[in-house]
Length: 378
Ligand code: MG
Image 1 (cartoon, rainbow, N blue to C red):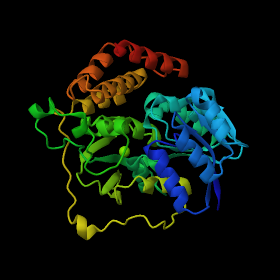
Image 2: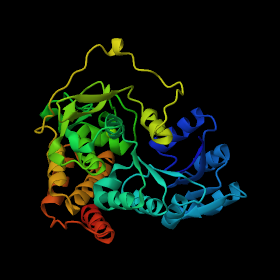
Image 3: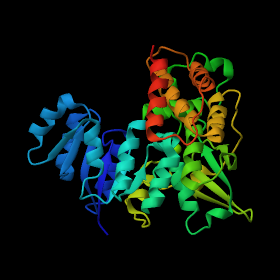
């Protein structure tokens, strides 16, 4: 089987790991279309390496430079360019690894065009899961999760009747401050927050792992992907990230997926599904792991988790507000403007001032997202 993909967000942490997996698969996957926000030089190098016919650069001031560097390649720009890159005719599957909600419209366009979706941007489902999942069902298009926990759950559900899911057991490493006392959390630095114990990821998701907001966003993501109520999704702190997540069924059986904490594994699974292949990635040795430990999350030290559970329960635009406020708060923390412990306070204040719209339209989602960001910008 050979496949042709569009890779949206090609220069980020996930995008570059997708490129690495494609390289390892040695010609089985073709990257026909590439899109990135602003890293023109990496985009040009990727287009040359993979022989891509279409590329898009979000930052339009670099459009001419990319055009001159890639003769014979269709070069698009801006938001509209992302949308066009997502529906490139010669692509079967679209990888969405664009940071945040800008991935939403291209995802919907790709579904509408009948493309398979491999989704790394959890914000797409957090903001508009009800719209995205319905569009995919209507079109008969699969949404293959790239988030490691959701890839694990997806694998645990292979051949199972979703109606028999009793509970989803979502594992969390606990992030950089798993054992840090509450009073110390006040003064932790961005550098400390970025030192993730097990996974190599982008900055936003690494800080989200430290606040446990990442796990909160993943509860909402799982709710939409697997059609399970938020209160059936339970978080397990599991420091080694060996078990990537589990599903408990009606008969009490628990099925787990284990592996190295390496994003290339879920990426490869989404690229080849339902096939598996050996691409010489590092293997898990259970004798080295020796012990699997699980504990309950500490809601007192990590208030973001409770906020996300509330957003999962209420649904609608409350999750949009939470997501946008978190993104603003995390960037302020990374810039040294606020404390680590201010992140949940900012998110909570934004959520408590919001009148939730249930079953929002795309326009309402964008309006609420924009309003939340504007009100927190000063
Ligand atoms: Mg994850």
